[in-house]
Length: 368
Length: 191
Image 1 (cartoon, each protein chain N blue to C red):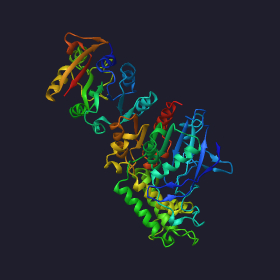
Image 2: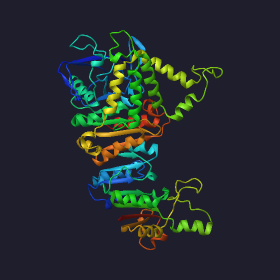
Image 3: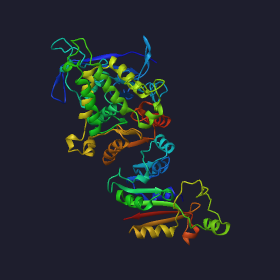
């Protein structure tokens, strides 16, 4: 499937949760399949930390660049683009085409950098609603995401209850735990204490806080895999013929993390990383309801599919069951899958027959 | 009369139903069609969970042995445990949980006191294998068999009221000597 990224520009200012006003913004997006005449077959796919609007297919001029959820989305795939009109989008504050810290600040003509406001999951969803208006989609057949993308799928059902028929919430949590926030803070500290960070004004100095980004990514990767999956994949296998008795990479796992860190630091923006982790930390739809998640979900009208993975210790199954409990308290139509998969948090990206089979069946039952 | 017809007759129209060990969701589908009773199923088996989703039945993949913490007090009219009781390791806490979550519980199980089962043990000297109990002793999901007498004694111990009982053999109601002549028992109980 050959696809092409597009951009939509919005000139009406967006009031952000934190109080700032984003005077104008762009959203990078891709679409797959055809919007039907009734405009009833649109599905919004939301991405997690480091992914983008490039959900499926590949580009004509870059055939190796395959979308991050290409196993899930496409012709004949569980989210079948022969039947659904799928919209991938890059949320604001990211660094893959939508307006973010690397974009020009209209007030100065220079990149926003450190001055780009902190945005929230609610802000992302509000911006996505503008994209839906732009595409002529009044109501999504489904909004779907994994991890941080799942928070957006949840928030859609709360911010725009009448505009979502199905919310598909995978490897989610209704709010970060203290441990989740702790990992994010270590990642942020790694970036902010990098001498090349310059308080976020590193673009004009022509440097990148590579060391901080590397460490942030290494920490992230540890939390994406289960202990078992990491042991299975790397064990204590040595990288070199014998222990070096120095501080080079002795073990495969060290080499893997270094490689992931290096790769990430070449394409990801440090200011974006800080903002996304803050958006994760801040997300808690129960805040305005005295911590009562069931009360928070009272306004939801969508049907829900919630999926968790038993080996996910970052957003454990118990967190998904909190969401299910809140939905049951409100008598929402909900199904919940707890997939006994070994990979950890990353399992939501893997082609597991039980997981994909259920998604396929669920989408088939969505009437258009 | 089948077990599911019995249950459908007992469940009042529009009642909220929770079906524990719901299999492919066929009972819930039937209750929705016949009684417009919305419900949720609980199932642990991957293939059965998938079947429920295919059948457009709300299913929650959870282990009954972990209890019913996902469900609020008195949040259902009926909590159903259909031919699953004998496969549960800890029946007493689950039965209590069922009546915490539901106003009434509907429980069915194969009667181990059925004469064919008794004969297989008493005369042939081996564990019963039958239409209702199709498993060999070494390869069965069932862990705790009981008879009508046993179940009613447990209800008495837990202070549960038996509101209704139907005993069936080959789809026919059994009125006389039910603990001997009935192969399947269906109970409706409340706290």
